Image (cartoon, rainbow, N blue to C red; front, top):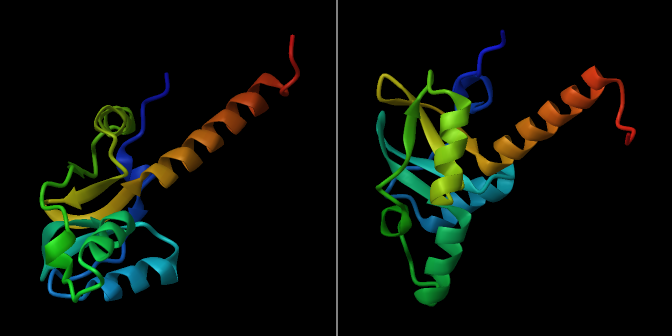
Length: 140
């Protein structure tokens, strides 16, 4: 009998992060350079929150592009899970609360990030495996 995997099997390990005192442009540049939309915000070794490219763009529009720091736009109330959390419970919570990302921790420290993009990629892989096992994708 197969077991539902833990989030550590699907997360992006060692994610890029940004400090709260960084300019939002710096955070946006990191996201653009790496093709990502979510960044954990860390203060030293401690998780301080999370910021998304959407949060930054909306804040820039509202503030007429004035100098903003990551701490001005980041979310402090972040959904975090331990490496051992089951994927199904993470996905359910993400769907229930319309969350774009989850911060994964190990002993309270940043270990990874799991986003809706990771979820879609994993689901696509799962579907392909199901079709392969069934012998094809022909209709009955």
